[in-house]
Length: 111
Length: 119
Image 1 (tube, rainbow over the protein chains, first blue to last red):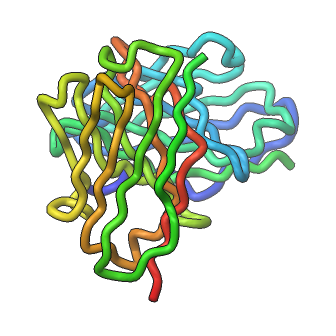
Image 2: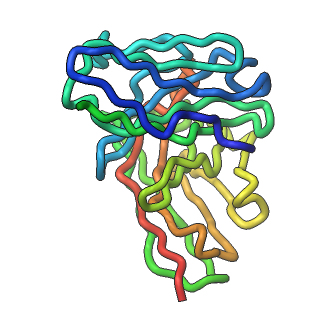
């Protein structure tokens, strides 16, 4: 049950777009369209921002979008804002447990 | 409004046991799978365990398999995590999490229960 691989940090200036990658295998990311993304501000519980690769929950800004190619999923944040500064985690269903596995997490910094 | 409230955390010595509880409200509890996710201070999220709506299937991370047991009582709208043979590396904030349906995601989170394993 290895964690999915994410870059440790990504940064961008206000108004720019950034993309966070999440790399797994054919047993998880590549094998199922069950990738989700979570935003976590310091001291707070994680918040769902994308589910099933591309879907946004009600109330989540349209600036957040998701995609997948092969064994790698991506989260793109467009029009970067100060409040987007947070930790982001990907998650995928995995056939190894028939449940889920998280990514290593990415710290997003708004310059 | 979905509410998930964890309880039962605290300081425990290595090798001892602890039982976490999660009281759920604001949704039809027995319609959804539930999970425990933990976060070591300053580190990332780790899926710990999950249970389907009818307890028909339960899963565990390799790091806790054989030591932790997940269960639920649908009549009491409650989720539990029995943690035995605790180790210092089990020290973490434990979140009770609701799975979405039909979406495959964790759509609601509690505020967490802190478990500290230390002598």
